[in-house]
Length: 94
Image 1 (tube, rainbow, N blue to C red):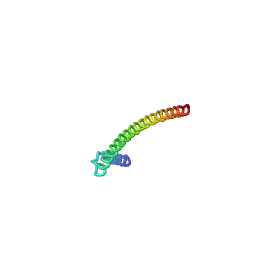
Image 2 (image 1 turned 60 degrees about the horizontal axis):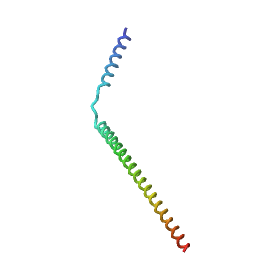
Image 3 (image 1 turned 180 degrees about the vertical axis):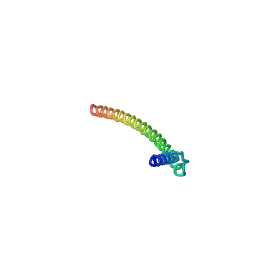
Image 4 (image 1 turned 30 degrees about the horizontal axis):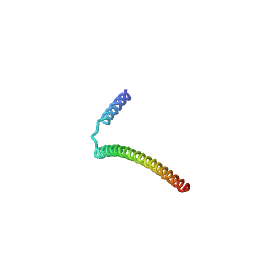
């Protein structure tokens, strides 16, 4: 009987301590700062993602323009080569 009484008291103490441990605590300064830091890092990550996407788009546009310029240069060189070939042909046949 003595052991049962001791077990009941011990069980009550454990339950009481568990209830106190489960009580919602107010946030301390470090926890608040941590949450603010988490938000700041998240926003920075979002901003970095947007900046990366814009940079990617700009590089793709620049690549397209370079490709167009190369095509135009190729056409101009081919025309110049044809004119030169015609001029040489005309000069040698006279």
